[in-house]
Amino acid sequence: MEDSKQQYHVVIFPFMSKGHTIPLLHLAHLLLRRGIAVTVFTTPANHPFTAKFLSNTTASIIDIPFPENVPEIPSGIESTDKLPSISVFHQFALATERMQPDFERALESFPVVNFMVFDGFLWWVADSAAKFGIQRLFFLGMSNYASCVSRAVAESKVLFGPQLDDELINVSKFPWINVTKNDFESPFRDPEPKGPPFELLLKSMIAASISNGFISNSFYELEPVFVDYLNNRSKQKTWCVGPLCLASTPRVETELLNEPSWIQWLDQKLKQGSSVLYVAFGSQAEISAEQLKEITIALEESRVNFLWVIRKQESELGEGFEERVKERGIVVREWVDQMEILMHPSIQGFLSHCGWNSVLESICAGVPILAWPMMAEQHINARMVREEIKIGLRVETCNGSVRGFVKWEGLEKMVKELMEGEMGKKVRNKVSEFAEMAKKAMKEGTGSSWRTLDMLLEEFCRAKMT
Image 1 (cartoon, rainbow, N blue to C red):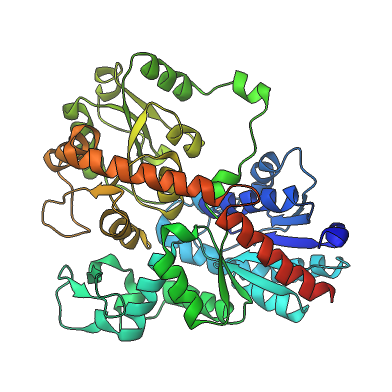
Image 2 (image 1 turned 180 degrees about the horizontal axis):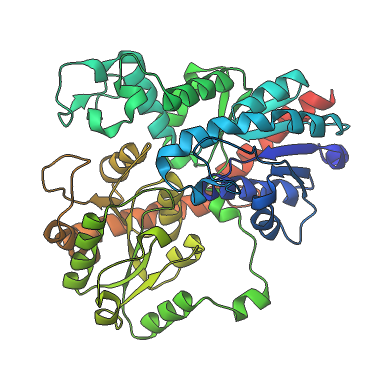
């Protein structure tokens, strides 16, 4: 493969959401380090972020105009992070199909594309790739555990039974796993699903069926049972090439001289010998004012040090809160490099929504999780974190439902348990073991994920060249 590497060309098309874009840009770095030409597609508003991430590389970036006049999507919004409400997420995703003609015109200009990696929410990219005879790999930004459990309950139709929403249901294909109806979103729970969420799910499933394989942002040692299950049942191989967050390149000296204020604050806490709880619920979840109030009380009463990243829409945290906690708490209202925060030695716990990127980053940093899932497949991820790999604890809701309201007393109790208790020590030890496995998996030349990516390139580049 070495002799003709310069001829190899991979196209990457991430979905317009930072949580979906960042892993694929990390993948781009891994490909570039192997001497492969990479072209990344994005939109004009997302170009600056993409360009910064790929600065000092040979990657090409092509912008495609985002559709205009999309119902319920304000003009100029080209990323889910900027949506006025998560309720219009599916309309946003479905509207991207209108980018297909421009995308295909760009594809016509390429002399060769060995294969294409596309986000599963951009289902129509698979159709375009098939039209041009290009091999295509489907990127699904979720765990193999969540993929297997979701598929198992869908195939067995167990969610359509008489059980109550929070009653435990056994997953027969994986008999040690129990779930509830409330762990799943509506398309999985409705015997006759319809509407934009189901439409997008169906289109993604069809795109998966015509793809040549799946790129998994995970590592084999983390979930071997589930990777094997997927690969034994399908001709389309699942390639574990992660954790992709460990593919980042070292920061240049100018960046190190301009540390953000929150990193400087963490440095101070480290000098004081203080541990810090990191609190973040992602850019998509919408938290009510009532629930935000309970979080502020819990953090204030717990007496733990914390760094809390919140969305600007949720910036009102009650009069005097930040002043009262300023000695041990900081609130950040802008986008942060989450991996940089989690890797900081002062961070000893993560109160998280359990988005898959956050789970992986926490594992890589060796930081235990206090799981508070809110949407998408996060409830399944939380079960994985607490019950399967045992690297975290879960918040307690006031009514026992996985989607229930969380009172400050219950949250304070679990925050202190994670940071100071015996259960916290156990999960901290466990996540440290997985952190070592993750680093080994990504080790150049010998790691399981590194070698898997090499095998993928052998298969797809050779197949195209012969």
